[in-house]
Length: 171
Image (cartoon, rainbow, N blue to C red; front, top):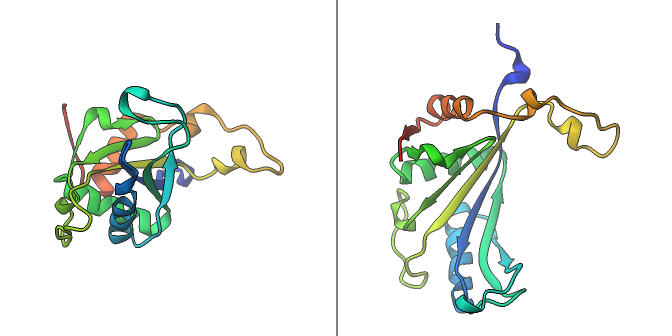
């Protein structure tokens, strides 16, 4: 009998499009995220200055959308499908999966839009177990054991293979 508190669930999924120093492509990145997720995108700002890339502190350098619940699961399925259900071993870390998609036209049903241009995106999925909120809540918070908080790479790999049909490759 399996303890239901040991189940793994998708906590949130963050989709990010990084543009860099040219701010004129920000509207295109936001339009792309709206097209893919159906949600309005927020912009991301540079935390430091990088003169060699022409980036100053506080400059808008990308767009981001956070998805939760059913929307996150559906988007993760389509993003894995766009990457041929293949993830590198290094894409999986403790409690998270991070991978990139080089061109948005790899998503099924999405066609090239000349207004947007050709953009890639990063997908970051965070996983947790039931009961982790006990440590994060403001009122009557308590500690949660490290074995309950941490989801190992092997557990996450098995979860992704079972629930999302992902294949883990040695890259």
